[in-house]
Image (tube, rainbow, N blue to C red; front, side, top):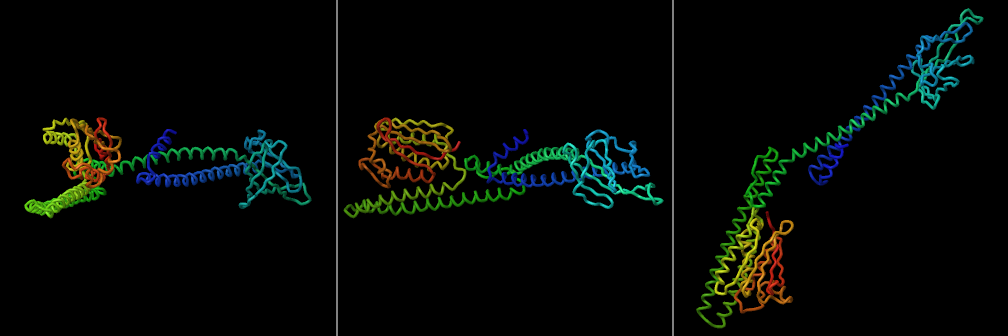
Length: 467
């Protein structure tokens, strides 16, 4: 029973759509069908052997009964007890004999029948014998053997005459049925134990056989976490080609992303140079046209920076193994911003666990955190608080708060719009929060704004995390 409980527990842990589950289920079904068929064949073979042996014993008893019988000159049968089976004596012993003269004389029967007689039915002739069944004393189910025998008699007008008798021997089938039932019970529990043992062996075999696939999964997880750059280790011959193809795919992906970034960088330099020339020409020739050109050049610069940042981030998402510790990035940004705003004496505090890691590239985290912290520094009076914590699952939360004037609830959604600016007195393009929102969405995160405890703006950034 303990084995069955263990197997049920192991099978319950397998998912129905898993490869291991399918292999074990298929093996269990075939084992159950095979064992059931084998058990049925063994049961039928044993039962047939027991019945044949019982029939043989009945035939031996019948032969002994015929040998012990003797007819007197008048045709009456006498039995010599020394030739008979001793079980013919006890009442209702389960073994009986009966002799029926065919001339209507009284029936002779064994002491075990007492005052009852046998009435055979369903007789089937095999050579000179007839086999059938009968109902015995105490509702016993009897196997019956019948044979016609002739004895010579002299009490007739002829010199020698013969008289026919029907000899019947019957045995109780209860012992045969009990032996077959006991054998079937033994077969059932033996095959049940064999089935559960077989399933356990298949389970272990499948677990061991699929271990290389779990090693591949763990290796891919290490690549995704950034602790490895390729599948490492020795794999079986069947898995080795898969590992080699995955390594080739990873290398190809890295090369494609690298080329894409190079093209993005080249495009950025190519566009910025003409824009710088246009801005310089406009500054050299003041006027309405120059002002319009400068304004449009500024818009173009913001849009180029925005879409190039999105393109660079989208490419970085396809690279496995990106892992960026959060604390060093925040500390570096805080150090730079303190220098930039040194004349204002801003206090920038950073609280972040050392083990917290962002699942992405450092420059993307710098882009998002830098925009949020820079925006806080522009509006803060004295204090900016930066906090990063690990949330449940594979996410982290970066919160940037300031003690500035904050925003009215109706303006929180407006500042996330691309290029929307509520106050032109502070330098900036108005795209910072929009860029942060777009990059975070590419990583499956989100940006939310609210009111800080110190009265200023509070920005919540949810990003994927590692470690």
